[in-house]
Image (cartoon, rainbow over all chains, first blue to last red; front, side):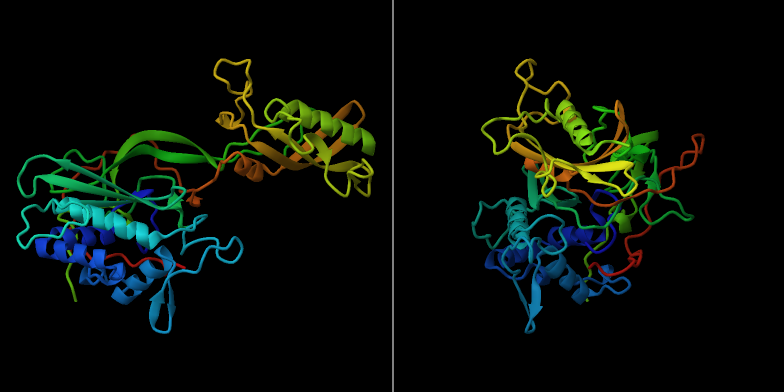
Length: 270
Length: 163
């Protein structure tokens, strides 16, 4: 959540820890669902309180502030987090740090997580969780950016009838937020950044994520105002166009840039 | 040096020729087709540079982003930017700089495409994209895969707080 997001899809440290928070304990998953349903603040349900997310200036309080302010558009007034002001085309045209979009991010995110937890625990929507939970499918989370508006996608798949015999996959699709994409999937550096691999020959661990792309995407801005004769127009591409070039590569992104570690980063409360 | 009125007539032809097939001047629209933007519309001339070598012509074109019934797919023959007809009303605005002599005029066009695209419902959602250095030339050895570092690996501090 906090960071540059140089790839257009990520899991990274934050979603990895959130996954472990709900997947690591049935009781925790049920408790999280109950809190989400009751309207408890998403940022303080517990997942962000993790030693494994402390880095540089970002402690738990900073992460909570980031989620509330930048994602949900909340304001901190009188010691409390209050919802965003109504939409106004000039004074309040966007929510948080999302570009070109205003909406109820918090409610969308909350419902997405509720639905994911209900699917994981084998519950109908709104159904109370039983004292003894008999199903607990792992939830996998991804963040895709940019798209025009904020939305959550929830998919599920049952493989067997065992308690962990299925999977819930969540794709949080968000508008842009101003942090740049990098037009190559490759990274340099010795040693390579944690989690990074290039053209892996095998997948030995319990999880991973690869992007398949050409090695470089060359920007191709169009020049429209060059002088020409009558009727000799040059029509634009929509935004900046790209011509991809180079080898097709398979890259595991670095974890701090949205990739995953194996074994995955755990939730570890303070 | 271009005559101001000739420059305006040439720009009207230039715009009509290029845009008219894409944005059809539907008579049901308010002021369809080509017009000069105010305050230039009233005297029918653009803005001439002090050295009289350039005439600036601010203009607007109003039309409907309609399909061309002559094509089986109903798309425009020009396939402008790849967008199929939306049937929406569009106002395209621009300024054309006209230079040269009669019979050999040259045009530099500055067009507000973003607003026109918004009129047909095309939004631009993106993030800035850094132009990273291209990777090394082919022939570099493939880096073998392997296990990632341990999950306790500290996060790399990020450049700064998100604003």
